[in-house]
Image (cartoon, rainbow, N blue to C red; front, side, top):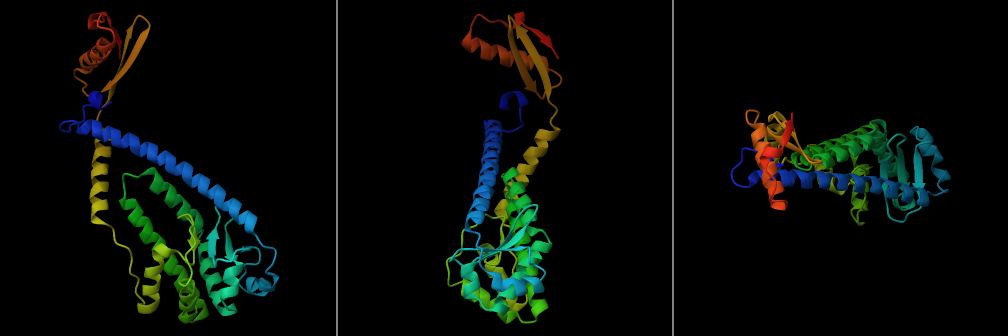
Length: 287
């Protein structure tokens, strides 16, 4: 493919580019399968750990309009997050309920309610899929981190504004920092998202968000990938079929003036390596 497309690159770089694109496609397919598997296993874990207790929290759920949107998990590790695609819900663990008081629980529920109302779980999942589909554009990952940070800070801001006391949320984060953060898929919107925790604390203390920066190396690599992709898109490609004694060969090339001769030559050289008796004169062509 690299030979027939004749990418205008020195040496064997054209083969390297095509090889990288092939590996990127394979990597993308693997990541998508892994993401689907993670969703399945995560949902299965949630279903298995759903608790029937927590009826004493009905009052606070009703106050926030979340009576049918909160699920209690029977887990000792403190967790609170929003998850779901078509029917998202807020999940809190029994360990988290035992760790906080009623006001701290309310500020966390308001934080997660913001994610619920804005369907951030679905948006984060789509962002993860886009990131998987374009691994050769690492700048997308930087933009997604900025977006995740913005959504978490917005949820904090809304929760604090509704309760009027930022110390409640700061106290919750302080308690959570004493525990090892739970490992969750990247598309989960949670109160203790480790990758955006620093920016949130910075926002709480200084009223100014320290957003993650776009890495220059990622920008350069993404720009180079974009140029190669545009080159492949605008490069005219012709197809030619060569037939002989029941053997069919389809070749591609981007040289419209002498496509047939180039294809004949390449095909003949390949066939000659297997059967030296082949001659290009016996081929008939069909564009």
